[in-house]
Image (cartoon, rainbow, N blue to C red; front, side):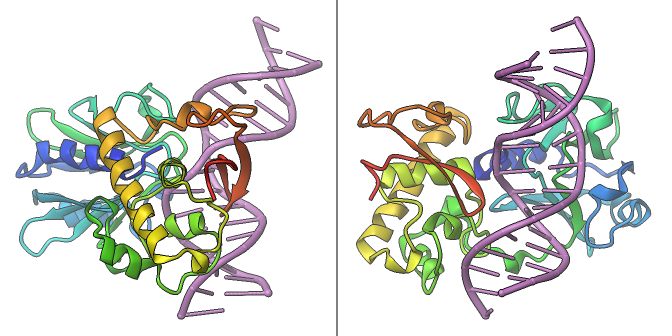
Length: 261
DNA sequence: ATTGTGGCCTGCCCGC
DNA sequence: TGCGGGCAGGCCACAA
């Protein structure tokens, strides 16, 4: 699913249409428009303008328009893809589909010469809104310093994994990346955040940085060392011991009870 | 205020 | 071969 790495690929993909005046907007699915946005309002807000910057905070893609125009915020849920001129930024999406069905097009921005940027989302778990609340998100995981990471988790309670996936504390980590980082840091995802000491938070920060760097190079959040073992009855790729499958923070969690303490 | 839970959505996969 | 049920999880509303 799109986690921070995939959305960063989408962001770079979106840079291909910067500066092009928007000629038209299609938004056939009202459910996909969030924060009271309507297809007519979206049309009025962006047609005649150009996107001038493609930013990203965590999993939220932000497209700034020129002049005093609004910022278009796009969330991709777990199956959303960004298609520019008929080409997807990512071919394979875990739990998604490789197909591009016309019925899955939720929002499309059209430019001259038949060019277009489309949000394609079979399961409709994503959404588009104008001027999203950027302040509700914590520091971005791809540019996260150790100091800001520790500050972001200060005072947190509950399973550490749930807090890492809390976008208000750290923005960008989803289920797969969090499991991979916790496995690399050798910390039990069920432990209470308030009982993790500073040295462990430093190790966790290093593991997050490493996970994002390595999996980013490999091509996405589904390329982790732990990922092939995300099935019942599998063993730890490090120690060979049996992996544990639990629900933590409402999400399916794989961890190694021998390696992770 | 912060954390926990359920539901949304629908393609896909497994078992019968 | 077809079909039904379970599963996937990012995000939000709501509860505690």
